[in-house]
Length: 327
Image (cartoon, rainbow, N blue to C red; front, side):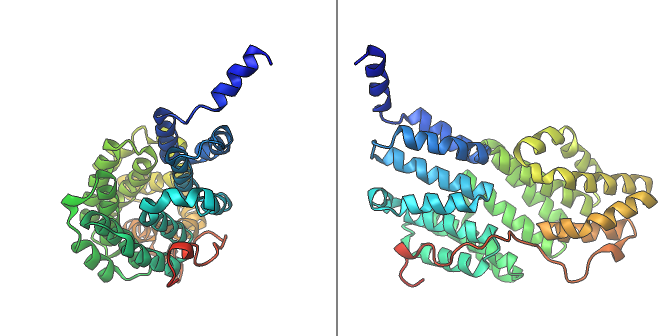
């Protein structure tokens, strides 16, 4: 046996390092699609390393699949987590995994399943911080179910000072969305800006780019052109890298901003807005879009009966049943 082969064999048997796991966690947050490319390589490299650290590799990959909305990958990773060889490592992570399943259902528009999985996760909450985190998640579902009063009631019961910066940022995003849905754009803007600062603090570049899109949209709805310009400057590159689904909506926002400044809507811009309004309402920007159109004298373009449209892929129901019998 050659020396080089011996060295290679020894390297393959090394346990996953804390640094490597930390780097993968960061990738799962900021570049989830790239994390899903790296995931099988790391799993293959450490397939004989049955430790908590390797189990957490699957845990972070589950988050990446959810953020990338890669549902086949999400289901495959979840099967690994529930497998006999790994399940034992997740006794302390049941709440987080059920929450991640709830998030997947929510992102996919299966809101009743999301609500049930969050409700089940409450059974595994060991402290007020975990309860607060779940309340924030449940509030998002109530907002999407067009029950803002229930969503706001849940948020009001949360002691925000107990939350981690990451969850606190989510809290302010939810609060901003609720305020936006009832036309309180100035208050929504304040909430989104708080979330933006927190996402910068925790280096969540994807979420920071996403909430910047919210700020831009609501700033125009609130007629805050100076603030819009402040956040819009240099944002194209960041949006393309970390939140590419915003790129074409930025064109909508630029047309609206230019129309505000000119105090008129050009014929060609009117035609472009008419062609694209359904798309952006279905993506969830409807609350601000109606205000945009009102301000440029084109409220008639807003489509009647249109709501947010979710992914067509249907996740199987009761994915968390292994830990939640009532499902």
